[in-house]
Amino acid sequence: MTLTDLVELVRGGGLGADPATCTVSVGFTTRQGARHATRGQSYRNTVVSLRVEEAIGSCAVEDIADDEVHACVGATVQDLLGHPNPAIRTAALDAYLAHVRPHHLAATKSLTIGPGGSLAKSMARAEAVVDLLDPAPGDRVLVVGVVNSLLHHLRERGATYVPCDLKGGHTEWDEPIATDAESALDGCDLVLASGMTVGNGTFEPLLRRAADVGKPVVLFAQTASAILPWFIGDGVRAVSAEPYPFFWLDGGPTTIHHYTERPS
Image 1 (cartoon, rainbow, N blue to C red):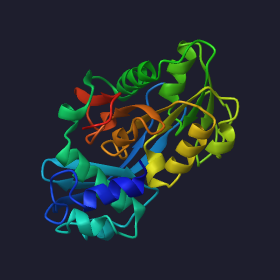
Image 2 (cartoon, helix red, strand yellow):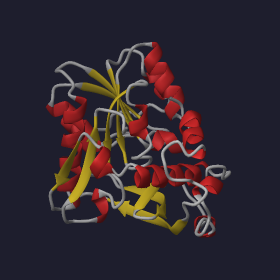
Image 3 (cartoon, one colour):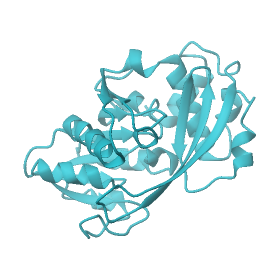
């Protein structure tokens, strides 16, 4: 399976609903800045989201004009699968797949992240993701898309890690962050990667490289949460999928979905 294969499956109506009649009813952008209590770093996120029927598909992006997102309203999924902006293409595909294969029906299991402050929810989500990865003590994990709460739980499990992110910088513990995931893969036992790799074009090259050297890949996804489960069995071992609204938007209970089998 490749992203091109998946898009062609959708275009051909192979998943039931005709993408030419599935229309985007809502398009919006979420922009947030966050700094968890007791943490020394802050961060920003911008996410494009499109709604198809009951489903919302999302893609993180560095920046995007509101008018470009609003122009998607009323367009069909078929039209948007050819959009020049990869964030729009990703959000449209994600929304369509979440519509035809809802997470609550397709996932292997669903988990509730309980209510709490932003740090408590971040830590709870990260613990569930690391449980899905299930590293052994001493395993070295390539973490693509640095989330400090994930690094915390890897440390708690006795694993080591190589943090990697296109933005570079340093972790909460002042560890340098690599920027080239494929090069950083050498010497690692497992890969834990963000769904944001789909939006920035690094997902498939990383997946191919990991397959070439026999490294299992587990994904945690807000971006492309309904897309990535389709890659299970093609280099991906498991996916933690978190559709919109994400844990950082709501202090109440939120849901994540774990996949260890491809949707059928």
